Length: 393
Ligand SMILES: Cc1cc2nc3c(=O)[nH]c(=O)nc-3n(C[C@H](O)[C@H](O)[C@H](O)COP(=O)(O)O)c2cc1C
Image (cartoon, protein in one colour):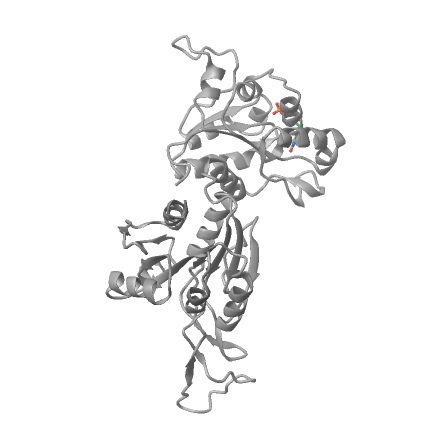
């Protein structure tokens, strides 16, 4: 929960996508951030301050000249007491004003007085986005360290199709988390495996398991937010591909093994969270098996143990494995750590499979044991990476 207790100014400007700021405010509050909304005069033409203040759980600020009380100066107070300033959506006009140092309303004045990071999510017609003046303004702001999320390509409210659409709300949220994350994995090349594998019986049937990929995807995203270059090797999963991450889709344990062997040498940190099948059918039928026989026996053979391979070939790598156990979690996880030559093992139970949360036990090579309470998988990912970053220091 990187955003927990963070003071965030959510600036909303006069774009047609202003209604999406309501959902953003709701999600920020869900992450336990303290949201202080600021709207431009134009934004009020699109959504009401009442809706935004209700979802943000705080009053909406709109007026530069409204006294803040206690003799405080409102815009300085907002600017200085914030951990992050987000503008979503940001109009072409607003971007132009900030790039030119104009401070003629509350939102632009807050930004001119801020020392917190500023994250801008532009939203406008394609022609406005492609306008050389907008391009120059965006480039100038990027050079000055302003952060951007989007815009994306797609159909626009004005009937055009192209770049200019407000980034998806979860992409903006991810960028906010990145802005506030420690950069303690900068320079690391991280390899993460995620999801189940599928071992074919015939062209339409397979043997698999209940892994959803959520834990691995959360780890990959958290590592990227913390500055790492990330490769995610994923078995079949319905999760959206995370942005800013090299994505390698695989299906079977054999494909997973091949991809891991390919990316292992150039990795510095490897996190093997995929639920790779231990056994596969000895024979995969070329055509669909008919239900003629009353009983069908499928002979299974062992798959390659990729983690063992990595442990054997380990040089400067930091190797993290997951141990899913139904009994004697600590003992079995520790055994896996030794057998596979891991640096750290994360023990968990089937309750974490295909679930939003996970309860894990982190065991290190020097035998420290940390039993975490049940937490959302994003939070678990950050707690594991906190430990890895400390050990790698
Ligand atoms: C219906 C309507 C939709 C608009 N949508 C956008 C938009 O998506 N992006 C944008 O940059 N400007 C848009 N504008 C223009 C801005 O509202 C206008 O430039 C305004 O001055 C912006 O003020 P602000 O930046 O202070 O909020 C729109 C205007 C209207 C009337």
